[in-house]
Amino acid sequence: MTAELHKRIAVLGLLLATLLLTGCQPAESPLLERRFIALGTIIDITLYGAEAEQADPVLAAIERDFHRLHHDWHAWEDSRLTALNTALQRGEHAPVPAELMAVLKQARALNRSSNGLFEPAIGGLMALWGFHSNDLPDSVPDNDTIAAWLAGRPRMTDLALENGQAHSDNPRLQLDLGAFAKGVAVDRAIAALRAAGIDNAIVNAGGDLRAIGARDRPWRIGIRHPRAPGVLASIATRNDESIFTSGDYERYFEFEGKRYHHIIDPRSGYPARDTASLTVIHSEAATADAAATALFVAGDAWPRTAADMGIERVLRVRADGTVEMTPAMAERIRFETEVEPVVVLQELP
Ligand code: AMP
Ligand code: MG
Image 1 (cartoon, rainbow, N blue to C red):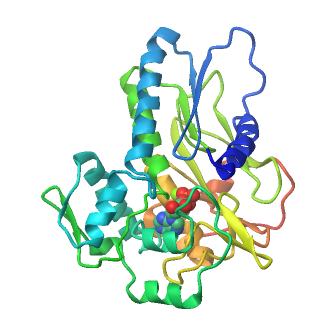
Image 2 (spheres, protein in one colour):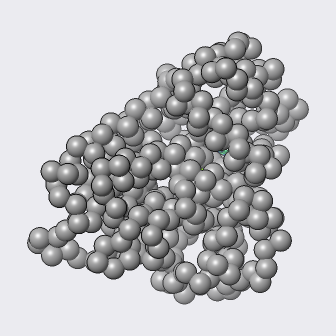
């Protein structure tokens, strides 16, 4: 495991302890928990009121599924995705397994609704920035390299997905599922739990999660403060909700006194500006994950992108510390630290 991953997981371990604000458990707790590492983060599954005999086989199956997706969709280690990227680069019509095909179609739909701000065809640019590595980059690509990528800018709309095959006329198109793979995996885990008759659960992938049912009281979820240790705010989930955050603190490096993070604006080729973290609540985790990334990239125009993607609950912490949110989010959120100013949008566009 790399130094970067070690560090992130150590921080996450502490954070997860505070994120799930469940308090102390009595000795005979009706909570069951399973924790493992996949998709570059800690996966934490908490069940309420399930028997271990009922839960163990499905938890084992979910863990296997996460590991498989981790290997199949890895963006820079040998995987089905890197094999597909190589074939696309050569201009081939590449066969795509049915499961990956469904995910690519879902990604293309989310790319459309976000007007290209969620852009999984951005893999080549991520590699130019040096983020396709187990270690963080230590320098910034030069302007000309970025300008060259922009000149031939690949988009998901360049990707033909037909008859079980993928093809693109743009050889620069390289897929990177980093902005929504966790969401897809979380949705799959929830579906597996439900199929096993488990209706009260949280599947938490490094602080991004989907919660179904409740415990003896609603699940209360913490949202990390982007600039301080601990929790900024908390939300009590209702029935079935996903809460996903994109943040500039998750993967970043500093170069000549400036922070460069891993959420790239495909219009400029540079890390998206003006947002420190952006949280959305939505029923489906895959949509929540893609939307958090897209709204982060949208910057001040996030209300327009939220409306286009059908996202009603949004919390944004601007890079200057101002907190903005939709009225539907304001109804649900409880701040756990003092923040100001807080701006509640009166109307979505
Ligand atoms: P997230 O933390 O969900 O916002 O995802 C960030 C990850 O998504 C990055 O590490 C990249 O792998 C990928 N990514 C970066 N920028 C974009 C973008 N504009 N659209 C889609 N994926 C992106
Ligand atoms: Mg995302």
